[in-house]
Length: 389
Image (cartoon, rainbow, N blue to C red; front, side):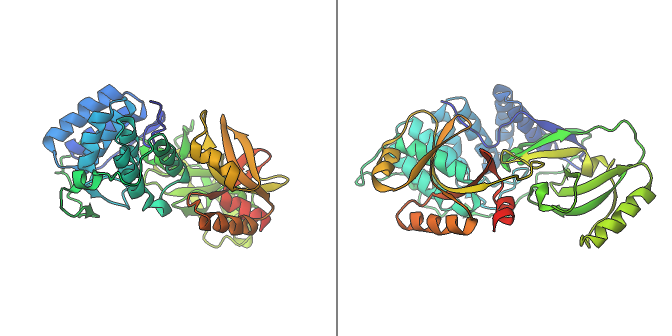
């Protein structure tokens, strides 16, 4: 079983923690193993944590996701059922609390499909879709494709809710009980939080330890392509150890040089800009390269085209996708990154595509969403809208 697991990746970085408990440290160790895809090693640490915290839904979630990746869906379901009893829709992936994320229903959809529990798979997918406003469309599409492998008739009812809650109400946004604090030293923290948010980073190391001065234009919690700062060139994007994303220009030896640049930037309308030391490892040592496979430094040149994406096909086309050819006028096939995207378009503006998206949703295609292309590559929607509308 080949999975695209949102919390597993190949990159990780190191930060310093002031106060960490031994249990928190062990959870971070497990996350590092997961990021490096050393799954057996991760299981050893996670099971050790499970013995100490048997009712922690966060740990149960990691165990379930790991067993899903290891093609052991029966074992995965056991842990995911426990995790689903305490879901926080505002879960932070670096959390040490007791809650699990809404993606627990994504993994339950996959695992139930793999064990031919089709009614339960569809029930898990329906639960996952309740949070669609907070979920990347990719994961909804992947979960939907799995349910199509596992057809069920309307008379067959799932037992998932009963399995999870056993007649009790689910716990949502429960209060977080912190793990007991015991200080430890330097720790390795993986980039699971970044990967979950679709970010790729590059570790920077300067040859000098002395300050290097630049001008910070802005900071945000969500990345945007540097084309958003169209009247300034040479913008670098950094993500700090607290997850804050900063946009900076310049690496000067003397502060006075950065201050002169700041004067001009303020005149350009960036009233919140100020001089910073870009050699501050906590804030500026991780350069953000791409977000959701979109290069942040890639500008837009030429024509932008909008499409309504209906499905992304890897190899086999499903019955539901075939039915689209009999129900929808104007389907285009776009070959992109070894997949065939079924889409409607192209549209010249975002507003035009938005009208068509609404029409498709009214016809029952609830997962239809807008994508933008420039020169054959997907681009950030926010940047595309600024360019065309």
